[in-house]
Image (cartoon, rainbow, N blue to C red; front, top):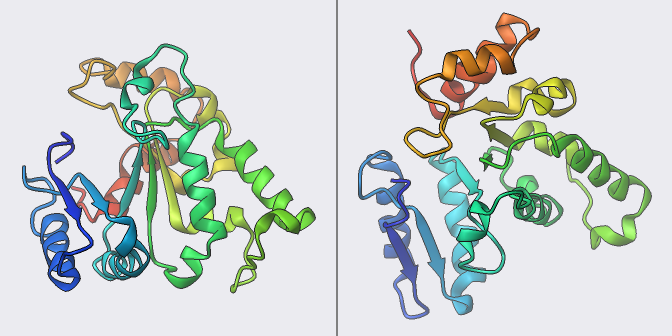
Length: 231
């Protein structure tokens, strides 16, 4: 997976029960195989019926969903993420706000969503603004109230994680973001990868960070999230 070549389109005429079984097989059978599902498109006429069933199934199967840096609201437009200086993180916060304020995590408290390759230094401001709107400007929440008495930032720490590559400023703000939500990756074998000098790069980025926190961000958090054994 990860190459953008394994797509499924659920048409309005599709057998929805069978479609769920096909998607389940594609995501859970062998997640790293070439047949692992990358992209799912659903016809708008069946989306409101099919997607809640799919989310419930993925939650039951403990599938972690990711919002990739190439995902934008104006499809396809993936090339924009490659432009120098482009605000790569713009789309991810919008998608996550929509899910939080639509009550998705009230209905599916075990669902995990990842922000992938958007870096992380924007997150403290984003969390603060969501909490401000929720507590001080409820007119903008479209009537949503947490069924668990939680703030939007509480859902971040429970239901989300963020993968980053080159964000030393974000590392310095880890107490606001939550060390438990942060996962470093080197994006090998892409051109922006820090390989083969990843260790030297990490030593610079994590200078002054306690060893246990560095280990959590570089290995333990990801292993716990995806069920990988650590030696």
